Image (cartoon, rainbow, N blue to C red; front, side, top):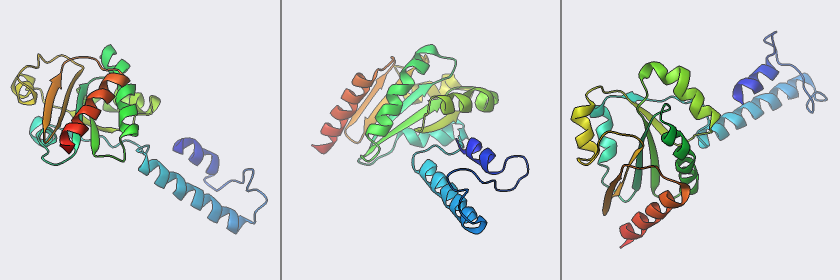
Length: 195
């Protein structure tokens, strides 16, 4: 969306072009209006996670802190990859959960197991195409035989896999989720955390 908007504004000449409905404004007001609209779009996109995704690439040591947050927030940590069909199928459910619980103490973390070389060619385009705004981290650590057990000893290493935890609840799921089942578990963890 941002690229299209900029293209309309700076079409070939690099100068701000008039476009309806602001073409009736004097050029100085038109520029101010366009700058205001650009600022509004950038702020809105940042608020809802639609900015160009800067996806951090981490090894397991850097990432591990996300598995042990000790506060009153529920964390949903989903391990997935763009090459995994069940992962791609369940991702909209995690995105909807992200949107539903955005203003509550629930954080959805999507941990991509794609290769770092696929970040620009597969991962970012996939996220953009599917309007995924939840936080994404690219886990780049080939020593998976070492760190898989640190996520959960029962994990075979297959994806999709999800860890859901807070200060009073911790459960690992090696399965595909739909919207109803993920929301049910999140609600359960929130209630348990309030006790």
